[in-house]
Image (cartoon, rainbow, N blue to C red):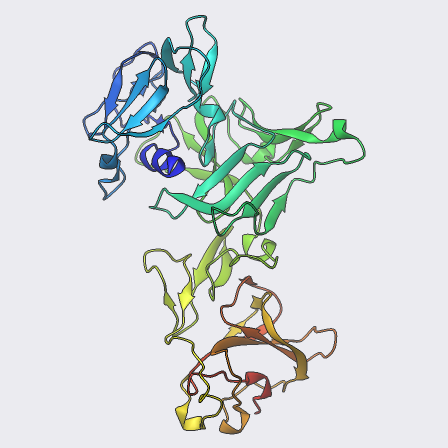
Amino acid sequence: MAYALFNFIFIFLIIFLLPLCTFSQNSGNISVGTSLVATERSAPWLSPSGDFAFGFQKLQNSDMFQLAIWVEIDAQSGLVLRDPQGRLLWSTGNIVGDVSHGFMNDTGNFVLVRSDSVSIWESFKDPSDTVLPTQIIAINGTLVSRKSETNFTRGRFYLRMLSGGNLVLNTRSVPMNSDFDDEYYNSQTSDPANASNSGYQLVFSERGRLYVLRRNGEQNALTTKRSIPTTSDHYFRATLDFDGVFRQYYYPKSFSGDPGWTVAEYWPLNICTNIDGDKGSGACGYNSVCRLDNGTPICECPRGYILSDPSNSFSDCNPPFIPSCGEDDQRGSAEDVSIVHVLLKLTYWGIFVFSSRVVDAHLGKPSPSPNAVSCVKGIASGVIRRNYRHLLSPTACSRYRFPTILQHSLLRESLFSSAQLNWCILNLCHLKK
């Protein structure tokens, strides 16, 4: 709830004030008792330079920020978010000492300060999906992607700085689960034999470089110097995007028109192939096929399958019928079959093989001959993969149960089948020319 509201109402928690925005300058100090109201005319709290602001930003074509009416600085509770009825939605929580004032500084870090000038809470230590230059992700620190491009609730991709010293990217399909699904990026900065050689921070330097800092002072660079322009002329950010890719961006401080954010680098290089474990749906939703376009995963449903959420291409692909198989559905005739055949070249279908038996298949393109149809109780859809590099046979065929997961581009062919044979399965491994 807290993450959803905070990431949902505050874009990156801070807002870059680009030149097309006009707000007055101030000292950056915000007094206790000061509040912000979620309206389009509400002025944010500015940093001294005016480059950064803290406040509400209305989402495009949406009135989402109206779910909360104001944010306030309270001496005892710190930063407080309330709904129109005054009910507490979120706060900075267990802070030590009374807040003297808040400060929006020129790094984009919003800080709550005691009367003795000690910082007792800061936004840089409570990030959502984005880090800025001078920000550090320490051991056990986490970034979490948003759910989709327009949905700012918690997504299923995580960046974590592990206690062992590795920076990793994980999926977690069920937010309530304590365990993560699959690891699809690892910085390889852990040294079990000598902890002093292990990483302990992800650092976003003032010069715009991302690196894992080892305890011995060594820097393992993520960002290459040639990929980024000068920090004096550009803004920088690094975001774990909704598609699971961790990207570093830059934006010119002086420009004409709307140049947009430019991607400097991204990790991993191919998320479609990097997620290859036995949990979760992979880079895309269940039954979806992932391909890469300039580092961006593109998710597509096989022909005849329908997105469970039409507004989100990363959602599951549902078959055109409801799989079911009863006691009387053991047999059927070819006339009862409705098949959607799509030859997906260079497609890999991961785990969830429902038949461990491997059989030979023709090199020719399969065809739905009535003689090739057999019915297996309990499963009503699946994928048949012909793997020309199988250890047992160069033309071996594997059969996968529905739903399918972990699908990406490799040197294989797949015949995706959606079949209804008295609500039973087609054993397409036996298809003949």
